[in-house]
Length: 111
Length: 114
Image (tube, rainbow over all chains, first blue to last red; front, top):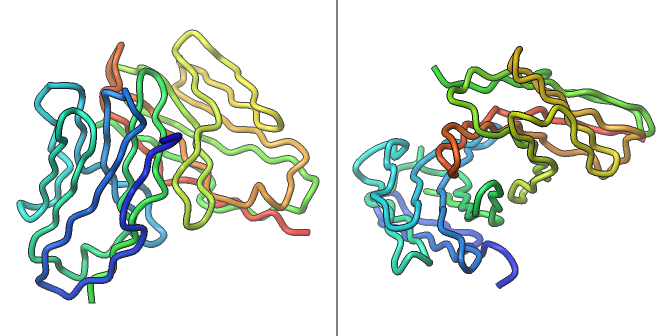
């Protein structure tokens, strides 16, 4: 596709359920980032994939959060046992030096 | 500590006026600095990217400056339009020669009024 695609665009889930968020990066981009943005807040770094290197997971807020990137392309962010404080917009970005392009995000609401 | 500070937090201007947004950073090692525009409910869109050797770059009515010595950047918007209403985010890349780690400022929320 022409840009970074994220799905779903909106997700409402019950507290305690698991959710999976998907990111389709721009074809050929080796770098992929996940961020989250809470209402009225700045972007919070979650995880960074660069090629075949081990991902930088330093931003994941708890062990309920995990992400994988299969075949160096599509990435899935998984949140287990969701909590209300997980409600946010989750943004994915992909890039090649020096650009980083963002998707439109997935708005997650935990009720 | 690697940080990016933006000011003001929010700004209201009249259509047609100019404005300048500020970004100070303490990121090291510095790789590049970008300004993004984020419309409400949308993902950020890149406006400019500047490396260490560049001190000004324009994109239409947007002009970014970079002073690598003082670790300051500004984004100047000329002849503002209603569509400029958005959050403007300063992002500094840490590390050399690769994507490294992006350090985000919290953004300046700009409102352009008719």
